[in-house]
Length: 211
Image (cartoon, rainbow, N blue to C red; front, side, top):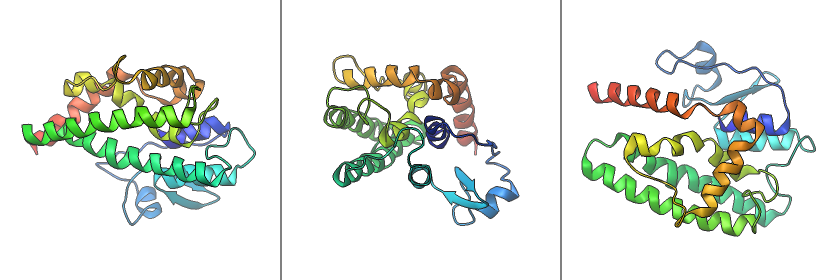
């Protein structure tokens, strides 16, 4: 979803191919033989793997087309990369533990870590946005695209895990950010329906439990 969001933000056309990760295509295996994972962007016949790397590639190759995802200033770019990595390592990783943890202790640890990360991101948004709607300021940027890929999962967390991630008192900026982000046309085109995503996630979790 991150990659598709970035492509839409840039106004770029693309062909989208979904993968059955239980029966991976020859194209995926040939394009990403190291990790055999999505997403993969194939551009001019060359595969680029990993969502963060793909976002940077899109921004560099199509510099000057649509909004820039990464700031021009070196320090601001480094800060955006830091928070993007933070989202992967400190938000998504414990969220997954909260969602599929095998024991109550593991799930509780995931919940505690996830909520702490959300509060940290509230501060990051305050610092990066400087009172504007997005991490990128007036326009969406790199961090917005990275976190934007999690929006539907975050909205479904209460049903899936019994945890309310965002609160009007604790994380008002992130709540407002999610509302602004969801109103963007690329988000409307790319992000999945939350109810359908929740049902899909419940099914996949049940399958993991039976294995």
